[in-house]
Image (tube, rainbow, N blue to C red; front, side, top):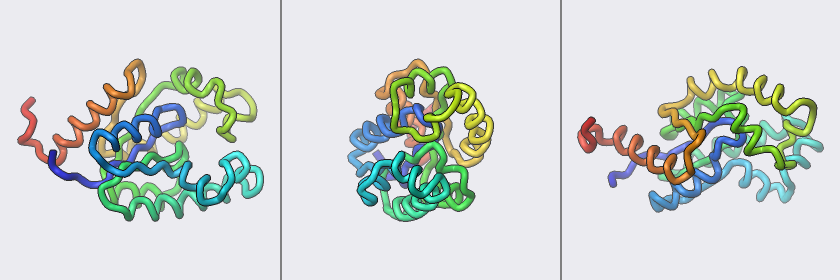
Length: 180
C-alpha cells in the first residue's frame, strides 16, 4: 500500500475514535496517538481532574498544544477528543497536517456507548441526552467542515469501519488503484 499522510480521527465522544484509531494504526503499521491519553500521561492526572483544577479552558489550551505537537509528526494515526474542533487553530492544524476522518454516530449510539463512563467531565452534569444533542448541534458543522472523509460508525463493528477507512484513504492517494 502506498504511503499517505497522517490520519486524524475526529468526532463526538463515543464514536470509537480510540478503538478504531488503534486498529487502524495496527493495520497500517503506524504509530498511534490519542490526544486525551497523551495529555493525561504528561500531566500525571486524568481529564476530570484537569477540568476540576483548570476548567474547560485550561484543558482546551493543553489540547491545542498537544494537537499542534502530534500533527507535526509524520505518518501517524491520531485520535482527538470530541471538542478538538472547537478552536479554529486546531481545525487548521488538523486540515493542514493530515487526512481528517470524521467518525459519525448518532446521539442514541453515544448514549449507549457512554452510559457507564464516569471519566467524561462534560457528561457529569445534567441531562446526558440533552447535553449530547446540544454538543452535536454545535460541533457537527465543525466536524463536517474539517473532515476530508466522513464514515458512519453506527451498527458497524470497529474492524468494518477500519476496512472502510483504509479503502477510502487509499483511494484518495491513488484514485486509479480502485475502480468503481
